[in-house]
Image (cartoon, rainbow, N blue to C red; front, top):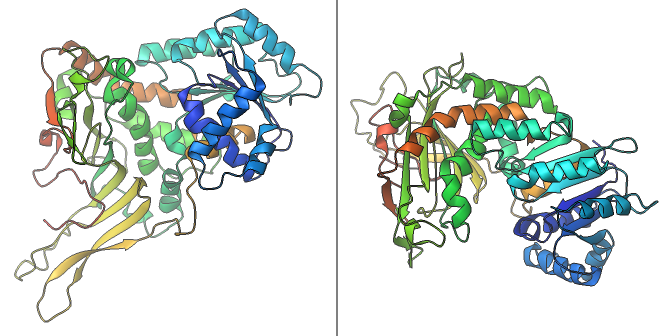
Length: 494
């Protein structure tokens, strides 16, 4: 799919997301010659910077994140695409001046992508002012708007935000970005499932016992106390990233790789998830909060000791959930999902556990290690696909051990690509397959809303876990006593 030249207008260009992700990603796209000739990047910020100061700032951003390939001559070429526009996004004057600037003859491409790297509470106001100044008119080129999560605080607020946004834009113009979906290994899940015919007959309730999805972090909330205390782990990770992973692992094969076909199948999964009644929340979800502990040998504070966190907060830094998908393929298979801050290790994994064989062929032998087969998908930091199987140990005895077949998709000499590079390029191409449609957002909120509403009124107690551990004791989620959280990508003999 060919990309046309465009103008990237970045609101909040001096903020952390731009500094850490957007500018380095655009630089890497440029040096890889993936940005169309003539593409410009127009930064909007309140700081009183001139062009020289802005270029110096971008150089620092890029150098801090460059993958050992910062080159002064290449940066000079990239800098020719850059321009800074000072303005307060709350003031109409900013948009009048922006419209005048963009309308200058032959200076900026007429295709425009607006990236709103700003607080979600400002989305509506910014779109209103862009619309009032005719900046969404598509008479001479397309207009696309990229917005970051969170898409609302709950179902009601998500619907209200959508209603306001759709007053100015069509659904085809809106790109709801979930950077998780841009990760190479996440996209490889689709290839692994649908390009390997031997797997498809096994990918169902007849062979799979249960599936686990884990996203754990060693870091705490850092400087995001105010935001995090109003959000929590369920909103921050489970409702968005992990439910998206679940749809990719479980959806039916789409009729094509086109955006709408892919997203239709993801929505079908979300619609098929069994609703959790409020009276059943405690059997399907668990929350916890990290206390003081040790991470990598260093003492760290508990959540309640972090900056901007109220002393009586019951906001969860750990959340786990059990779901069922009531369709033909997955009926009766439990799906376990968890995420947490200050845990033992930073990793994202999908662990698929297969059923025990119906005939215990080795029941009268000395074989001790008869683990179930697993398919392990490492998303980050270790990107891998592993299939665990039981094999006989060398020697005269009938002893077995577990070995894994490794199908990692990156060779040692191949560099990883940041998710934002993929996604920023897809915006230019008009490829929306890795962006969220509103009904995906809506049905994801429908799944977690009963849990959040129940937790909101339970203000007296929250379980705690030591920082540096694998979280609180939540084994009651599991359907069977032999099921437990899988925390390793290497074979485990139980």
